[in-house]
Length: 523
Image 1 (cartoon, rainbow, N blue to C red):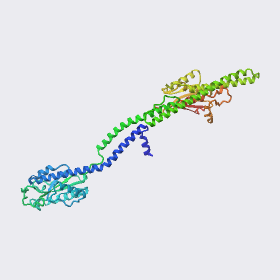
Image 2: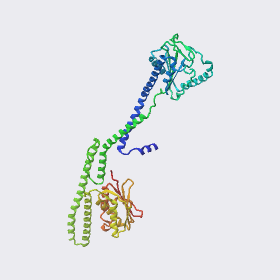
Image 3: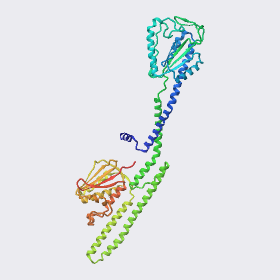
């Protein structure tokens, strides 16, 4: 639940945001999947390139050593050193190192580069464990060499070369073979290449001389041993790939944002038109453009708006026509009632005809309210309510306005809202001794208008019925005390035409609380 709440908190609510997020997610996921699929191939290619370069370099140095007099070998080795590699000359290679499939493959490549020497070169790929084992063994060898240095110095070994030619040159301090190499960066590559001098001169040391002219050329004079660091493949995720994904996501996100906003612009126009229709306005037909789905929705909306407008107009015209036509027979009946001889019956008939005429007048007023085509304008609804309350208060009516004085601009039909407020306030003044009108903001951005009184109120089971036309709680049928029964119906019709609603509740003072809700404006 926490993860779902965290995701929903940052999930975009707009269609544009969700489309952009969907496209960016697809792009990033594609980059990641392709990167994972190509990572192994890239690693293998770079690894092969690095190993091949190291083999070529060692092969070239071995050729130089073979063509160089022995007194210059030290200079050749010094030139061949690098932060990632170290080389030395030994009389015998270390054949105890393990050989793997990749070792045999690399050895074959090196021997081909050396034109297949009589004694083949060997390449070992050392893991971290192998590297540490070799390092420990060499530490022991160095300690043993230090102990035996006095006894072995100046003596010939094997074919006349010292055990470590570079280390036992007079005046030269033996180098630590792993000083510049890190076993943590394994795998390392150890290469052993035989050196066959190509000249006939004697190869000499400072203490001894060995004639290469009589040397058995089936055996190397000495071995070049090199250890290469940095032959491991690069990591899968590097800064360059992250930057590439970020730049691609930014560019595609910008393009997707403008395309998505262009596609959804028609939806915004359609939403605004639907909001206006819900408020009783009938705007111009919505432009039928954009994607085919939006065009179909706009076409259906325009047809619905036209049919709804015709239905409302036909109904209100019929109501107005009926009300108008009833006035003639009512007038005729009033004239005939004057000739009734019984005074009591004549009075009752005339009273009934007067009541019918009042109802017809109210019905015509209701119909005119429905058919009125007042233009919607932005007004300060707080100023409108305050002015209406002040006008009534100046006449001595017990009413007051509760507001913060801040302006609240709201698009509406001014006369329609004013008539609805007038009906509700008149109803409150008729039954209450004290009336209060308040204006409050709604949580969703709309407006609440509250009209409360301290009168008898309305029973909870009849609060919905009072909005029905010609329904009255007062049964005397006296217009002065009960009215016609259209005031609340006209008020609710006006408010609903703006997309709002009227709610009747019990007031804190025990009377009636009429709450008008006007919805926020769709943008």
